[in-house]
Length: 194
Image (tube, rainbow, N blue to C red):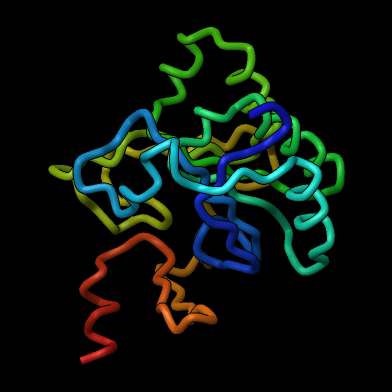
């Protein structure tokens, strides 16, 4: 998978995956597989679509509306080598980088994996920790359980910048499928359709 990323879904112009208007790349493949995960369809590495880094770079950099890119999952650190390459380029072009991971920052550092360290180097905001069903908590933006933490790895953002993050977005895809993006109590969204 050299110079490619295995992607579940690419979402343009979202306000639920980090501060401001962003593109979000949902990676395919997850080694953590949290109980109660809202996207178990991203677990299997055999699924997804392989995209060249050049394609992803061109797609993101051609969007003049966004302030940044979010890597979510699946598990982004499973593809850290290639993500760090594009994260570096995005930052060099003035975009911010947000990464969601089921690992904790402490465990990432303990692995002493150069690819992991490179991805951290080009991350402005790391949101870490596995989703723990018994600690489900939607009181904070972007996270689903109380153990998950925000790590501001650059001075680009602070907690104040997360106050405008929306809980949900609904998208109607060309095939008529309704896509619900975001983190929160999904029953709130279901109530909209009753």
